[in-house]
Length: 260
Image 1 (cartoon, rainbow, N blue to C red):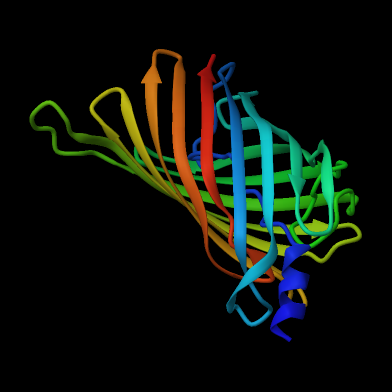
Image 2 (image 1 turned 180 degrees about the vertical axis):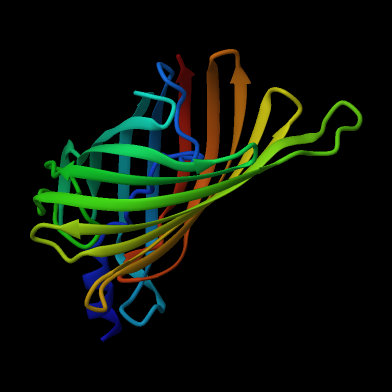
């Protein structure tokens, strides 16, 4: 039974986390942000349908090069676009192709000096790569998602050459309606804190559950961002912390940000 469970999990792919950072705060009118991110995840183990950790018969590799962009249509309305190119292999498949292409509108429902609340509606068109973690490459059609985000920023005590400043916390909850695949519930959380003027530390969690007692996942990511004027460089590490019918992937995340 343990071997059959390992075979089942070997066909699954952990859901790639969203690239959104502090999405509760929309872009100002006429301003834009573009993030190009490269990821390489490797899994030797997986979580079975009972959430137990088991070795995979064959190592699994998933890597992608993605683009995340958003632009402020108004001070309260932002358009967002996401897409990636994927390359991976496991015991069953060796695939390469475009992942899902997503477009969304984010409306800032409320904001004061420190707190922001936004709602988002998005559409996703399936690609030739993995469109869901529990499906073969190319499986899936059109998806719709509704999401809400709430964020709170904090000041910091400044002392010496380094200090924590302009820190923030944000949580997101989403419902994804899929065509040809089970629907999902997703939840993301981000904690960020600046050290001085040029460094940012990020801690992020990405979780989700598939309807009808399907796959579940929780991935944790820690990264450091270095600001260089309108550019930023990000380096981090992501690892699956818990789940069900989900590979225990871990690997390096690298990204370049550009603000316009």
